[in-house]
Every structure is written in C-alpha cells, then in structure tokens.
Image (cartoon, rainbow, N blue to C red; front, side, top):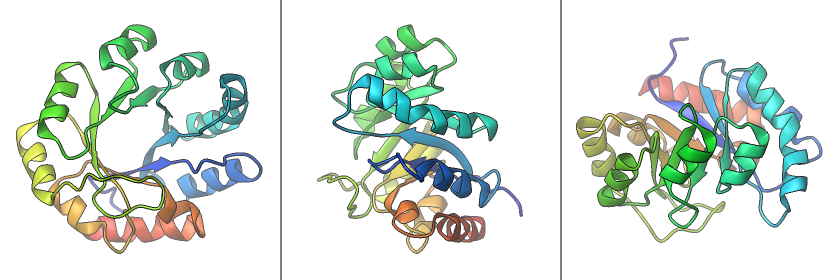
Length: 209
C-alpha cells in the first residue's frame, strides 16, 4: 500500500498501564508507516510515576521509528530523552523547549483555530502546529472549531506541518486529509475499541483521499 501524504499521530489515553504497551505496539504495527508519532499524555501523576509508565512505551516507539512526544512537560521530555514535546498555550514557550531539549527536538504547539497563534508558534521555532477541535471530542473539551479553510490556507502558505485534532474518526477524516492536514491526531477513535481495526480503517480512508 502506498504511504499516504497524511499520517497518524496517536495520542495516548490517560490510563497507559496494564496491557496498554501491547495495544500501542499493535496499533503501530497495524499499518506500517502510517503512525509516525505518539504523544504520551497522562494527568495527575508525579514525574517519577509518569517516567515509569513512559519507559516501555518509549521503547516500543523507538524500535518502530515512531516519534515519542511528551504532552505539556518540557522537564519530563528532557528526563526521558523523548523526541519532543507538545505545548498548549499555557505550557511554555517553544524557545524554552528548544533550549532545554536541543535543536533536534520536535516541538509542537496547540493553536486552536487561530492563524495568528500558529504564525507566532512558527516564528518561535515550533516544528509543527495543531489546529482543532475539528469535531466534538470526548477526549478533551474545546470551544474552538476551526474550518477546513484554515488547513487549506496553512497548507498553501506555510511550510511548517500542521496537525488536525479533535473527534477525528475513519468516517470523518477524509475532508481533513483533502484540506491539507499533514497529520491526524487521534485518541478515542483508536483506544475505545479494537486498535488494530481502527488503524486499518484510518489507513483505508486516508489512502483513498
């Protein structure tokens, strides 16, 4: 199967213990080359516990050449030797992340539905920007609803990759791919059921776009 121009960026559920490492491996292996990034996102745990939970997931990603991105925490990303960090608007500055993590780190920034925030992030050194939520999401609440035109404009005007996020499923992903999203960030659509079948369904729709 030809690798699509748009790829999957998996976001972890909040619970990543137990059998989750095996689920992550199955998801990545379901469509080789489609999943190129994984974001480690946990809440209400201290850094030591977070690091313990992250280690097996980091190893799975490394052996499969999938970028391991830490949500929110520059300090945890540095401790783990992660590939990068994803920052919300209140989680720090890309310049600070670059200073701490080095020039090769992948730094992403949430930009909601704002061209202005995305341009600012790019000027501050972000490697990618994330727009959303495009659809209602049970994973994370958001009052921001960007239009497809934002992806189209960004794809045409700016070289920095963009990630579409928010309630994305195999059934609704094709307009985002066709509008120019470089990555689809997905969580609930993968982990709420059979992760292998979900990734394969995304692969089918994304290749057809």
